[in-house]
Length: 153
Image (tube, rainbow, N blue to C red):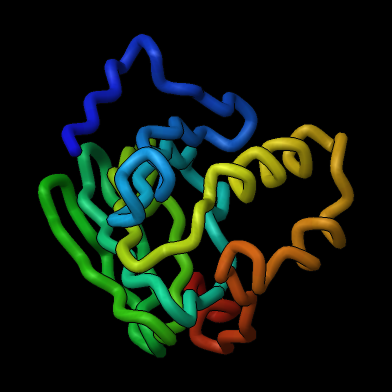
């Protein structure tokens, strides 16, 4: 199965900075992928893990601060990172410039509904408690991380 998503046809969620590329049903169950833009000083995703999915990060521009397990790393333009299942991770733009990242999740559940739900929460149209109720549905489980909480100290 060949999958082609033209940039002009991809759905962009403006409030969250996410461009939806291909989801699990589109790829015959192989993967889900999106591109995200992170503004400096704005958290991209709080600490969470995926029980089933591995998540690939590829930095297209800028720099991204990433929690992986209990380590903090900064990914620069062109860097690749693979976070295995059950590994807590979080991310945000690092420094003063916008970060742009390609994400691919393998062995994933369909996720585009999750990103649309987040979009509603960012716009104030959906309560964040509704997002929290979808942990199992989207395999996105929020966790606590003292390392992430103290990352800027």
